[in-house]
Amino acid sequence: MKTTLRLELPALPTLHAGSRVAFAVLDRQQAVQRAGELPLSELASAVPAGRIEAILHPADSVVAAVTLPPLPGHRLAAAVEGAVEPLLLGEIDALAVAHGARAADGSVPVAWAAREALARALRLLAECGLPADAVLPAPLALPVASDGWTVLVRADHVVVRTGPQSGEVWAIDPLATTGDDPALAALQPALEQGSPARLDWIDPPPAGRPELAGTALRALPAEARWQGPAPGWSLALPALQPHRRGRSPWRGPIAWAAGAAAVWLLGLNVHAWQLGREETALRQRMTAQVKAAFPDLPVVLDPVRQAEQRRDALRAAGGEFGTTDFLPLALAAAQLLPEASNNLKELRYATGELRLRLADDAIGMVATNAPAAAPEPATSQRPRRFLPRRENTAPAGPAPAAVTRMEIDPAILQRAASLGLGVTRDEGEWVIRPGGDAGKDGGMRPAPAAGVRIQPDQSRR
Image (tube, rainbow, N blue to C red; front, side):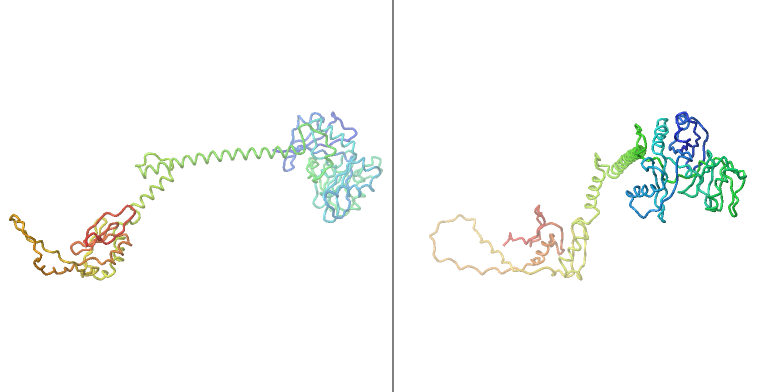
């Protein structure tokens, strides 16, 4: 758990390594975890902390406010020094001036301390292993009262925090002759001018009560002196910080960035390892599923591709209609013989062959005339005798009559060729097959390798 160590420094001119310093360790909720007093040189080893804040002696710093117009950030520091200079009795170069952000009303909180004394204190803290991350004026380390002031008596001074960015310090006059408490006497002029509704007085409380109507007094425990919120700016100016070997303002951010990068890389590697295991397991499951689905595969190297190839092969074989299936042949027959749609008498299909018998046998047929064959002359078995040639021969007999034949309409044959079909007639039935040649005489020949083309058989004239 990150903690904050707050130190109440004595007056800067008297600070040395053996000075006893009051301290408190705060957690993230500003609760006091430990408090005490130790020599400065022993604090680093006895009280390790993540952040160190030093609280100056009330007499070592001054808190004020100046009013400035809106300015860019790089010009605000110079404007603050120019506004503070009329308030000083000495040279501004001898002071360390710090400021906060400009408020909406134009006010800018400022604080200053002796430059050399502050630089020496920062070096001493660093040498003792307590490099200060912030140096707070005494008023700005106290709690903030919601409707009043917070008061602490410390080292003969009345320290008052009047707001989140404001506070004042009044010295207690030990020779005061009034009957009031010396702290109240020192605070009385400020009370008359400011008139707060309530005073939160950190233990020990004053001996008397403020003589102001409407101002209530509430006691706070002693540990409340450590629990004030820091204003967000401090007198630990970078120019005054000593050179610390191995430690720089960027050390913390760089360390956090390196740690975050290491955690990110570790997580990335773990995630990649998990994804690799999941990929291996998924590939093994896919291989097992492919082997179970296709046991004839000898080796499975690429389960997805091999499964797709086998799926496509099965789809081409049985998942989709082939050219020899009934439905493609029936559709092709309807295109080949459109006149047979209302004359179908019988239909039979068997393994790539469709047979149709029509009520009208003349559909799709045409009549052709073919000459009859001439009769062979009769020959005698007697031996021939050589006779003198006669010029006058016997007159020829009558010519044979033509024979009428029924053949497939050439238009149907041409249509079958365009559909890639073979068509024949067999005993009054139309026989339709894919990828064959049919002749007029009903013969079938194998289709060429490049595809099926049906043409009329012209071999017989």
